[in-house]
Image (cartoon, rainbow, N blue to C red; front, side, top):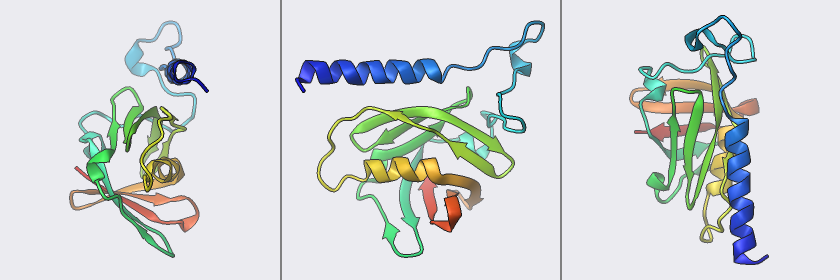
Amino acid sequence: MKPTRMLLVVMLTVAIAAACAKKKEAPPGTDDSTAVDARPGMIPVPSDSTIARGPWHWVATVTPVERIAPPNPENYTLEFLPDSTIAARLDCNRGSGRYHVDGKAIQIGPLAATRMMCPEGSLDMKFAQQLDAARIWFMHGDTLMFDLYADSGTMRLVR
């Protein structure tokens, strides 16, 4: 594919993802602060909450069979924004998506991301897959932890 065509595809993908991630409009007769997401019980994280104070840098994931650690944690970041969206850096790519929190339960994504070819050894796809698999969040000191789907591991992120 020609570079110009590839750039156009990436730009259209990001534009479509941004349009899909727009905040649901409030029903008539309510102000924006009372609008809720379509999923019952799921609420955005308040901007003053601990999880919202980022950006968070991915430092490791421990699974039942291995420990995965990016060589440069500053290339793998996650920021929770007040409008229930996230901004992510996936090595040489950028991503965005929605998140929902209900107590300690969390759902992130799906992520819309640029599709640049990162250097060999990049963990960009692994990071995105693990964010999508996050199901429970908790803090351990100043470290944000995500337990992944089906006990498949625990991600660790720091500020």
